[in-house]
Amino acid sequence: MALYATAGAQEMLVPAGRWQQRPVATKSAASVSLPFFDDFSNYRGAPTGSLWAPGGAYVGTDYSALPPTVGVMTLDALDADGYLYPQASTSPFPADTAMSLPIHLDGLDSTNAVVMSFYYMPSGGGEHPWEAVGDTPNAQDSLFLDFYSAADSAWHTVWSRGGTSAATLQQETGHAWQYVAIAITDSIYFDSTFRFRFRNHCSLEDNGKAGMMGNVDQWNIDYVMVDRGRTVDSMPVFRDITFVKPAPTMLRHYRAMPARQYRTIDMAQSLSMTIANLYSSPIASYYSYRVVDNDGTVLYTYDGGYQNAPAEGYQTAPAHANPTVGYNFTESNTQKTYTIVHNVREGATGDDYPQNDTVRYQQHFLDYYAYDDGTAENGYGLTSTAATVSLAYRFDLNTADTLSAIDMAFNNTFDNANLGIHFRLTIWQAEDGLPGTVLYTDQASRQPILPDSAALAGERGAFHRYVLEHSVVVYGSIFVGFVQEGNEFINIGFDRSFNSADRIYHYTENTWRQSYLSGSLMLRPCFGQSAIVGIENSQLSALNSRLTIYPNPADNEVHINGMPQGSKAQLYDISGRRVLSVEGNRIDTSCLPAGIYMLRAITPDGTLHTAKLIIRH
Image (tube, rainbow, N blue to C red):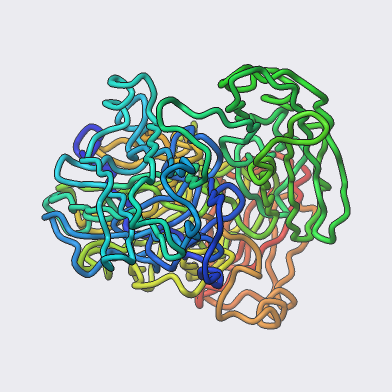
C-alpha cells in the first residue's frame, strides 16, 4: 500500500495493525446439510460456528465497498486475536483460513447440478487514493479456494486469484465485485465429509519503519452458497431485498456524545440508507425503523410505506433511501444507550433471504464523544524532522464540562515498533477555527503508547484510557490531541467509515493544517468524574466543599476562600476564551465586561475546582 502524505511529509496513512477486539467464535456444529448459505449480514466477529470451523477470518462491515449485502468475511494478515501472524514478512506468507464445516453431499452425484458460488473483491477501493479503504493485495499476494476429498485425504485447489485492485477489476468487467461459480462434478467429493476453504497469502509493505508496517492485503468475500439444481453458465438471480451498508448514527456530527452534552439540535434531519434489489425485476418493498429504549420500550416508529426497488439496482425513493428523523432523544444527564432497528422486506411475506433485512445501530450517550466506529481500517501518524509534532481534533460542546481523560486506540505494529513512543496530552481552545490557547498539557510525565488495550476491552474495544494529570473545565469549541516528541511513527487507529477530516489538524511548518484524509481518528475525549481513574469522588467532593467564592455576583473583585498557597485562578468567558489568570485568592474583575464566566482554581497538587461566576457593574 502506498503512503499518502501532506505537505512537508507530516501526515501519513498506513495499513492498520489490529482490528477491534474480536468476539469469541460460537460453538461449532458437527456438520451441515444443503443449502449452505452465508452472506455475513446478521453477525460480526468470528465466522459463525454453525457453518464454519475456527480460523483467522473476520466478519464485519469495514473493509468492503458496496458489497452484495451488508457484512462481508475478510481474509487479511491478522490472526484470530487481531495480531499480525508470527510468520509475517515482506515475502509472501500464508495467513488466514476460512474453512467450512463438513457438508453432506452423500447420495448426490454430478447429475444433481451442485454448484458452489461466491462474490469476492480486494480491499483498497476508493475514487481517490486518500479515500481508499483497507489495503490492495499486491501482485505476489493471492486468494485460494480449495475442496477437500476424503477419498485421498487431500485438499485440491480449484480456483485462485493473484493480487489486484478493485479499480482494475472494475475496468476489466464493469463491476468491482466479482462472481465466481464452480460446479462440483468429481465423484471424490460426493460424501458426508466434503469441505471447502478460502485461504490467502500476504506480504508486508517495506515502508522503511516497522511502526508503519501493519495489516495488509485484505480480500472480502460475500454471499457464499453451495446448493443443488444450479448452473454456472450465467449470473444467478437472487430474489433478495437487502441492506448494503450498516445502520447510520442519528446524530449530525457524532457517532456518540456525552449524555450531558447532547441537545436536540444535534439530531440529523435525515438518514442515508443503502438498500439493493438483487432480483432481475423491480420489487415492491416495505421499509421502516424504530427507536428502542434500553428496557425494550419502542419510543418511535417510522413508516416508509411501499416503494418500488429497481431491478438489480439501489433504492432511490426518498422514503426508503433518505428517511426523515422525526424523533429527538430526551435531553438528560443520565447515561443511556438506544437501539435503532431498521427493517426492509419484499411485499407482505418477505423475500428468500430475510437475514439481511435488518440492521441495527447502538446510539450511545455515555461519557465520551466519538466520530469513529471503534474499528481501524488504517493507521494514522505524523512524521517530521522537527523536534515535536502536534495533532489536534475538534469537538464542539453545548455546555461547560470537565474533561478528565482521553481514550485512544493505537495499532499494534510489526515487532511492536511503536510501543513506548511518548507524547503529551494537550487541549487547546478553538480560536478562529484553529487550535489556539493551550488549556492543558501534561507536565509531570509524558504518556507512553501501551502494549495492549485490555483496560477497556469490550465496550470500548481497542481503546486505552489516558487520564489527565488534573481535570480541565472546557466549553465552546475545543481541540483535543497530543504533542509528540520526536519523529517516530505513532500509528493511531484511523476509521474510514465516517469522515471527520474537517475536524483534524496537525501542526507543520509553523502553521496548523487541516487533514484531507477521509476518515476519523480513534480518539475520544471523556468527561465527568466517571472518566477519572484513581481519584475517589469523595476526595473531589471534600475539595469542592472547602473552596467558596464571594461575592457572587461580583463587581470589582472576587475572593476565593480555602485556596492553598501557590494556587492559580483562571476566568473564562462564555465563548471559552481565557480572560484572566492570576496566582492567589483574589481576582480583579473591574476591567471585565458584565456577564457570565467560568472560574477554575488549580491547587499546587493539580486538583481542580470550578464554579460559575456572574459579574455585574
